[in-house]
Image (cartoon, rainbow, N blue to C red):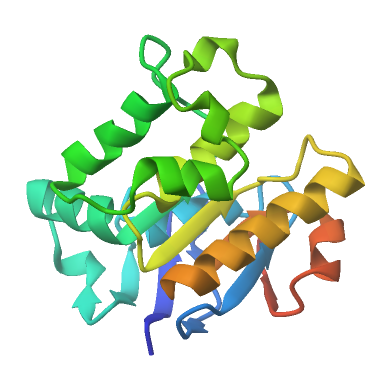
Length: 210
């Protein structure tokens, strides 16, 4: 099993304990995490990425117990093994597209995928040396996806990647994520309230407040 969780829970201060369904994913397998706003979807994503520590439970990725890692050790493991596609791109504005991806290599201390080839696959090869400030919203999102993939992670986490897209672009982005996950043998978890995505990924769990 490439990635699994067991008995995960988390409590925000002054709020009821959130308990999450167990997850089990093999390489190239995809999972949707569905739920309404405020249900705990983003909390779960932050737990899976190591940005939050659970109140209880285990998170295993590629033979490593994530909840046992701290500080620089956790940061380095995350950089090499987890790619995150945020709802908003969060690109570094002073840098070019290429430099944003090189920064991901640098922080993870790895050479990862060849940047020009990856951008070509995502239809962004012509933007290699462009300032990110000149990109359209759709282009910026594809660069954000490229940044998440550039270190060939074992786990890809996508937070509401289709929330602002029409049906055609929703299908394009989901297929892009699935194809890239298959290519690098990564597990893919998409956190969303967008029911359209269920047309493309049948395996899902639902997060609900108790």
